[in-house]
Length: 361
Image 1: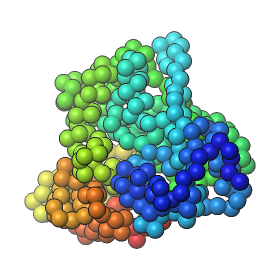
Image 2: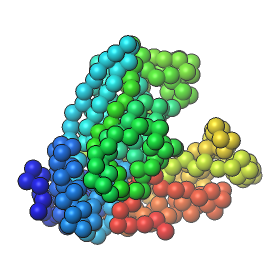
Image 3: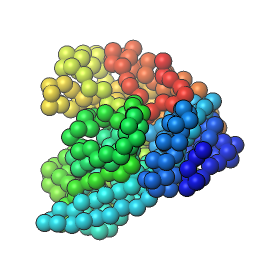
Image 4: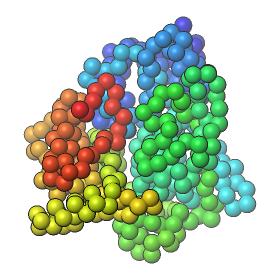
């Protein structure tokens, strides 16, 4: 039996499409809304004890659910709230997993705390940030995360794990594509002087009028990041279908230097602008997935205004639902984009969102 503190809904009342930023996905057999860490633990333990397939959903911003939905229990994280402790010029921020991420960032900026401002405008919940090692505009979760409180489903224990043990990498961690552990809360270390993290992203530095690695007032940085994201259709707007997406659908590929050289050669041979590239600490090269997509002949708005799903008209990394699309159609578009890039440059793009009940094969 489910815990008496949890709330159940029938799948016909709330299909999973309503819980994702893509507004796609069929129903779940059972939906449990959990409003605290204790309710989350109880709901997960109940499902595990019953041998039920389990899917945990927060903001649904990095999730693609198949048209047939999920044949099991979905636990929707609705735990909210955060606390701040300040000591010696640093602030320790503790946040519940179901807390809306951008609301949290706004609260830290309003309080003059620095560190999260470059992550403004990112949809979803705080619990997803360690899983995905969420990052934007030169800042990643791993730069600020102290530890995460996890439920170990194998043992039933609630444990606190230091960030160094989570194997945080580029848009990944030991928690991603694994279901043994789930985030209940996370702690971040922030500054208290009202200044941002060092501005490492060239585009953001230009907008702010500062040198790279300089720091700036947190409010100005948040405003600049939000403006940049809105210009790319990356701030959720109920009335703007160009924002009905899972954010960046593909990760920027990290390749060997010889692969990067071949990409540059092919772009030059086609009289195209170079594909943006960044040197990585391990000697590999990170390539701009957006540039690869554009240079492979996929324009913004592809395949056209009448398509039920299409590439965003503002950013080629976002695949959007125009309001009447399906997951099947979205994945067909993703395959088209991926295959064009592979044919043009020999680089295989990997999806960033988690795919549930569907596959990009």
